[in-house]
Image (cartoon, rainbow, N blue to C red; front, side, top):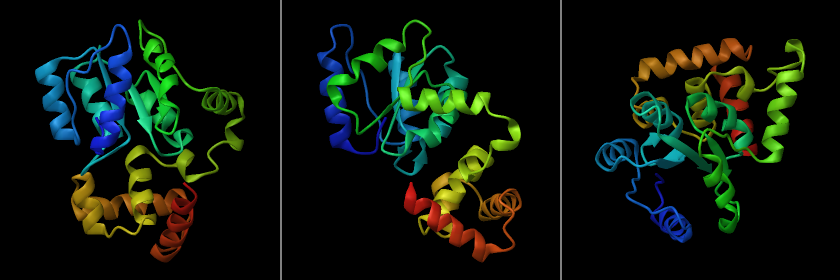
Length: 207
């Protein structure tokens, strides 16, 4: 599931070269993805964090809730360190960046069977460091402090989307988006919307 046809085409070529894998369907957004999974009942779903008019993390949660035994491999052009733990908690089995050479996708594929989890060395090290660091030293960044929806609203704010645009993209009401922004300000100890916008823009430019 990816919102870029050329990306889906390249991934399909790689998958179809695997001796025991074949592509049975594809989708560009959450609604189409859920319909495709319902109709095709695949053994493995490959999900991009960024989808057309929807969110990959929410799709992962939806799929895991409806089909808990369906294995999911997450790919992303984002810095995977921001989303790896969230995707695993949502139900994914493997994380592989889109920028990774296609020939090396076989390892994440293999990790999805039977019950393994695949992370590259950098992300595995980051997660282990977080688990072994004293709580007072953790949660220093927005990615560590904010819940999934809060981080999505924070990132989209930093990318210049208005309240209405964020609400439409995340399928929320404008009032709900404003509620998330108030929570973000509280968690990040920001005094007003101007500080929130400034920090969000700075953060988004680096990620």
